[in-house]
Amino acid sequence: MGLKRGANTHVSVSRRQPKHTSRIYFASVLLLLLFTPIADTSWWYIGALGARVICDNIPGLVNKQRQLCQRHPDLMQSIGEGAKEWIKECQHQFRHHRWNCSTLDRDHTVFGRVTLRSSREAAFVYAISSAGVVYAITRACSQGELKICSCDSQKRGFDRDDHGSFDWGGCSDNINYGISFAKAFVDAREKMVKDARALMNMHNNRCGRMAVKRFMKQECKCHGMSGSCTTRTCWLAMSDFRRTGDYLRKKYNTAVEVTMNQDGTGFMVADRNFKGTMKNDLVYVENSPDYCLMDRTAGSLGTAGRVCNKSSRGTDGCEVMCCGRGYDTMRIKRVTQCECKFKWCCAVECKDCEDVVDVHTCKPHKRPDWLDLT
Ligand SMILES: *[C@@H]1O[C@H](CO)[C@@H](O)[C@H](O)[C@H]1NC(C)=O
Ligand SMILES: *[C@@H]1O[C@H](CO)[C@@H](O)[C@H](O)[C@H]1NC(C)=O
Image 1 (cartoon, rainbow, N blue to C red):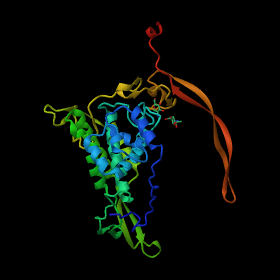
Image 2 (cartoon, helix red, strand yellow; image 1 turned 45 degrees about the vertical axis):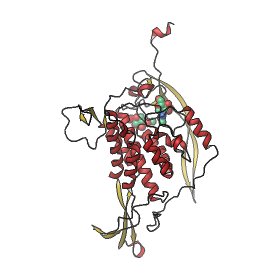
Image 3 (cartoon, protein in one colour; image 1 turned 90 degrees about the horizontal axis):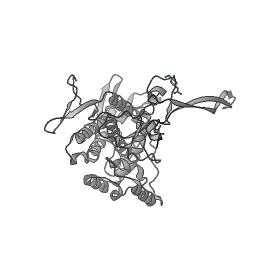
Image 4 (cartoon, rainbow, N blue to C red; image 1 turned 90 degrees about the vertical axis):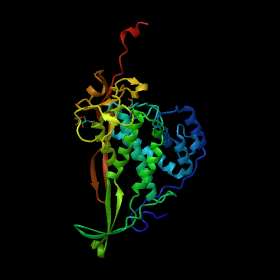
């Protein structure tokens, strides 16, 4: 307990600032409660709760989640901070797509309101949010921020590889703790019902948890005279969350459509020609809308006003992004730094240059003529 990465491995760790409760906290929770409709998966809202978590006030937690929340408020704090990260990662992965993982609120820490049903996009969101919980908790364990866990000091002893022998030591990321807590907390909601959607969510949650584990890497520190590396100490650490995001994004592309089997205990792949297992694939039940038009019940914001790329043939191209509705072009002046010169010593001096660029944005949907008659 209390073992911190860095204690014996000299990896620098940026400890977070002590957690102070801001005075406006209660006000913001109240506001959140007033304006937050109960969404399908409400632990996502934890990210919006800021510096402190009051378990009774998080809308839509199921009992088991509320109990875990009360027992481990410090873990909820980590989950909340993690939520901001996975939402950002989701938006990064889908920035060039009609569906862009955005929230409907001005407050980007709140992911909700958009119902995603059982679509491919829902599969991705469940997976990356579970992965985000694993990541956040595991990291907080290693940084010594949580009472219940620390880094994994079980991993001790000697080993050898092509470069010689080394100790396992220091502080490995305790991914197994992260995974088991994420499983208990996130899956709790799905365990209450037995339907296709719950099964789908649990499957995708698991994919997300495992995706983080997949990118654990060995890190080492050399000892010996002037870095000669005659002896090494190694430990296992998580990779950057981007790798998990990239991986799950690929899994989104190849997600598998499934249907519930007769007795409701599992699902089958819809395509009879599908070969192999879907153990590591994302699965979905419902086809996605095209996300061209605003349809809140389908989780679609539409693409009116989205920036598109005139010369791209891909999903960010104006043709695809605007669904054939066409686009508006705005000429805007842009100031950039240019003609940078290195000045002895030691500065870089640049000029401000202006150039003009065209920005294209998708036209809104034209209302059918019969609507204009009234
Ligand atoms: C995503 O799309 C919505 C609606 O089309 C838009 O309002 C929002 O700014 C976009 N978000 C990002 C992060 O690009
Ligand atoms: C637009 O798409 C083209 C072709 O894919 C690419 O080369 C270019 O960098 C893109 N422009 C922007 C601003 O993203």
